[in-house]
View 1 (cartoon, rainbow, N blue to C red):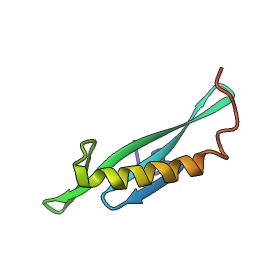
View 2: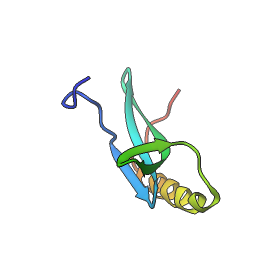
View 3: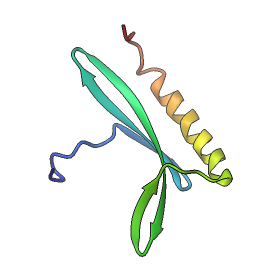
View 4: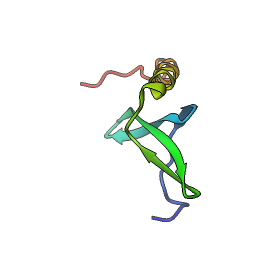
Length: 81
């Protein structure tokens, strides 16, 4: 998949090395928003990510998720049936 056609997250919230990406998925007439938390780090001049958090990352993860929740509340107006 080329960079031009690659999907991008709707919103990215970053706190320190922790970030949460918000993705928009269309299912029929509904739009579902989902979040993907990850920790980013650099090794050998290359950026990588993982889903493992140490105790110091937890506060950043909580802060990111609270920010995401605040951002999503007005957007999530529909019911999923």
